[in-house]
Amino acid sequence: MYDNWEELENSIQNCKLCKLCTTRTNIVFGTGNKNADLMFIGEGPGADEDLQGKPFVGKAGKLMDMAFMGLQINRDEVYIANIVKCRPPANRNPEDDEAEACLNYLRNQVILVKPKIIVLLGSVALKNILGKEYGITSSRGKWVERKNILYMPTWHPAALLRDENKKIEFWKDLKQVKQKLEEIKEV
Ligand code: URA
Ligand code: SF4
Image (tube, rainbow, N blue to C red):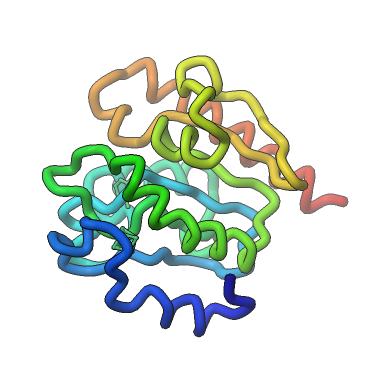
């Protein structure tokens, strides 16, 4: 673990800890406010993210932008990262060995950002952060507290494109997040 961003960011350059290194264009480390109270964790880069080296800049990113706008949250206020930093081929889910190889980078990011709230976007983020026993359908919308961090699991934005109901639930979950964030800021 590194106690500063520079060493952490240097450590991931040319990473070859898993097989995703062979197919990536760019490593997508993470972006945003490095002292954010609120952090979002997705699954892994898609095609647009792989090309640009930034998380959530494609179709799912547009949905995130709409959510941020609705919540009156500026994208630069929050920190955004993924479980794996390199794109899984054809956007398949990251495999267990890939997530395991990559997770120490994310753990280090969380330690440095020190967020109060983490939104887990979808099943891959949920299972890799809180544990395999968690299912997204039953866990979403419910706070889980661990080591002074509040976790809110919700749908991955890509899932919203396929299901209108999930849009409503996603929005409900993020409203809870916004409300909690304001409570935290008041104390
Ligand atoms: N989906 C994700 O999970 N992460 C991204 O960065 C983009 C799409
Ligand atoms: Fe390294 Fe993570 Fe990329 Fe695998 S996904 S090569 S562990 S940065």
